[in-house]
Image (cartoon, rainbow over all chains, first blue to last red; front, side, top):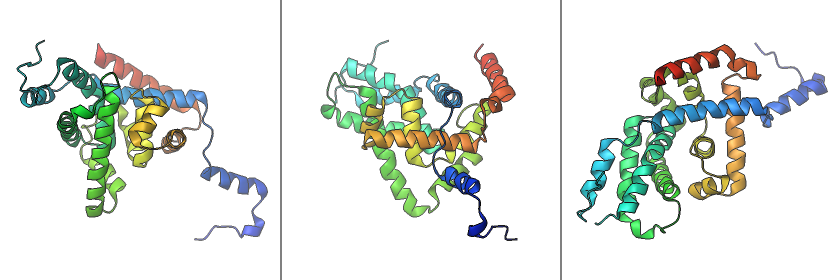
Amino acid sequence: MNDRKPPGRQNPMEAAATRNKKTPVKLSRDIQARLGQQLRAMYDDVVEQGVPDRFADLLNRLDDSGNKGKP
Amino acid sequence: MAIDESVRQAILGAVPSLRAFAISLCGSVDRADDLVQETLVRALANIDSFQPGTNMAAWLFTILRNHFRSEYRKRRREVEDSDGHYAESLKSQPEQYGRVEFSEFRTAMAKLPTDQREALVLVGASGFSYEEAAHICGCAVGTIKSRVNRARTRLAELMSIDSAEDFGPDQATRAVLVGNDRN
């Protein structure tokens, strides 16, 4: 089914709406803040896991200074 | 090689954030941890090029990001639809990214182009300034700003957010879940 209208019959409001889909819409501060909260929550979920042993072990293996990361 | 204690502490201090960034780039915890490991090996091999007093995290992020990009380009030649491939890898490992309540947001993030996703994460979650993010990504500050803006707009579209109320009950549920989980 082809439901596209001939270009000549598109009214200016519709044309503007189509254009707006391509240009970034200004997001409200509220929505930006809430997207930011979700992003940080997801990120911090990983950060809170701390340093897995494999990375501390790796630094110890690569370090031959005898300075083995005393607690 | 000998690793100075202050350098060791600075590197270990950056690892949690480096992992979170790596996971946001490649979508898999296992792959991300390999990426972090390769980054640390490279960083220590080139520790002489680190300028003491500058930001260790930013330096490590730059190495990780460049390494990921060269790997990514390599794999792109092998797998044509790289972003689709990324989305698939998330689907097959739904629990790997983190807790399940982030699934909607995570799915939307996976659909962002890599340029936009990394800019958004660096500025919006890692806490880097636009200038630092531009340095890490090797581009202009204005480019980072426009990528972050496009990422936010696209995320809102993907999550069909027309108004803040759309976050309403769902957001409240998430907050409760997160709260309970952290008790």
